[in-house]
Structures are given as structure tokens and as C-alpha cells.
Length: 307
Ligand code: NCD
Image (cartoon, rainbow, N blue to C red; front, top):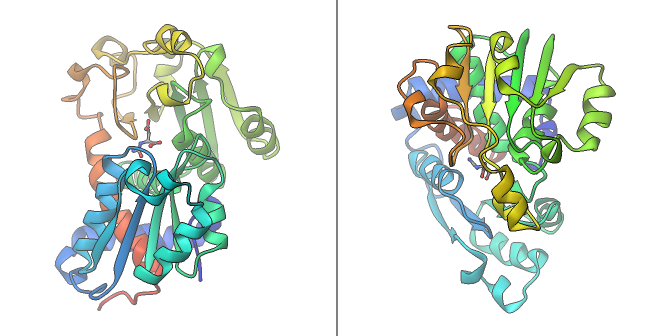
């Protein structure tokens, strides 16, 4: 039995197969309408979510399966003090696969160690968010036709943003990837990513404070919101929350072939005037998220691709 806790749980070849399956799903949706008939997905969300939880549910429903679950810690037995280990043991009796989001780093790993069904990490604190990364990879591959040979700008809260950590982990496995890490000093990338991933693998990267300087060289600009819920101090959040705002003026500095991605939710970091720019890809990204989660559910449940 396999889980998806970190993008590195799948080899590059396996990710390639998964993205190809997702792309086949995109183009032949009706063919997949019954491949998970009779299967159940449990969504265990101890933290707020709109896209991730609903896209998992939409994915399972589109495969013919059904869904059950909870959308906040308050409405689960966590409020009574139940451990993740005990909860997942019970859920294993109710469902065939589980997607879990939790504010504590490592909680999906703990769940997987006590589970008899596949566990998907739908975000564990400031750590990892592998299904957002699969979504990002599918978006980048579909829009640019490749996953290597590009400069990716990651902008905003690189310290707490788990989508950024997972995306870096996944992208360093492709050839000729360069990163520009755009963040205020307080929200720089954690040292375990800088040292153990980027430096250890000899990846070309530079860290800058200003978005304008980086714009002209980027093939992908990945914007993120400042993660209010992970700050210890509200004053720090208020001081940093609007540190980057992507607007039309900044878009003029970028290549015509650059794409803007954002895992969403957006707060102020992308002005709505950018939404109509053909390079704004963040709402298309949401749609890719459903196909990729359909492909992941099928892969973990070892469901055959229909002919
Ligand atoms: C992200 C998350 O939860 O980490 N959202 C998402 O899943 N699309 C990004 C965020 O909350 O900023």
C-alpha cells in the first residue's frame, strides 16, 4: 500500500505517468466516470480549506466514488482529545482512501503509520503540500510543454508557505532549473531547504528582496500569500502582509511567455487587474488540480486505466 506524504514519495517516472494520466482524464473525462464505483474517500480536514478539500471531493465524485469527512477540527473527535493515530484507525474502517490536512508538521506521516488505507497529505502545517505540487507541475507542463530548463520565481512567504517547500523539492529533480527566491528577510526560505535541497543538489538560485528586479528573467512566477495563521505575532503579520503586490505595471516587466501561478487563496498579493492578463494562470491551475487528484486517487487505489 502506498501513501502520498511528500512529492518525493513518487519517482520522476511515476510523476510523469501520473501527469500523463491526469492529461488523459482532462481530455476524456466521461471515460473515467465509473472507475471508482463503490469506493469511498474520507476528507479529514483539521484546518480550513476551500480548493483542496472540494477538489478532492469533486475528483472522487467524478470517478464514480463517494465522499465522507469533516471540515474542521471542532467538528471531529479531535475536539474531545482524540489522537490522529486513533482517528485514522477508525477511518480505515469507513473508507478506502483518506486525504488529511492538519496544522502540525508530520501529522500525515503519523496517520500513515497507523492506517490500513492510503493516506494523502493535503497539507501538514508549514511543511509539505504534495497534491498542490502535482497541480503546479501539471499546470507548468500543460502551459509551457516542459518541466525542465526554466527560471522559476517564488515570491512572498517562503518561510511558512508549504506549497513552496513542496514545489522546490519536486522541481529540483528536473534538468536546468533555476530559482529566484523573492521574500522579505523575515520570510526567507527555511535553511533546511536552502542547505539540504538547493545547495546540496547544486541548484542555481538567488535570494532577493525586490520583485521588479527579478521579473524580466522569469518563465514562471509563483506568488504566495503571507501565512497569517502561522505567525506568532499579529504586528509582524500586519507589517509584512502587503510586502508584494503584483499589478499591471509589474507585469509589463515580464516576458510575454511568462505564466503567473498562485496556489490560492489570494489576499492582496495579486491585484485583480492582472486576472485578465493571458499570462495569469491561477484559475486554470484550480481546474488542473481536479484532474491531478483524480489521477492520484486512481494510482493509490491501483485502479486500472480504462481503455
Ligand atoms: C495553500 C495551502 O493550504 O497551503 N492553499 C491551497 O491548498 N491551495 C496555500 C495557502 O493557503 O496559502
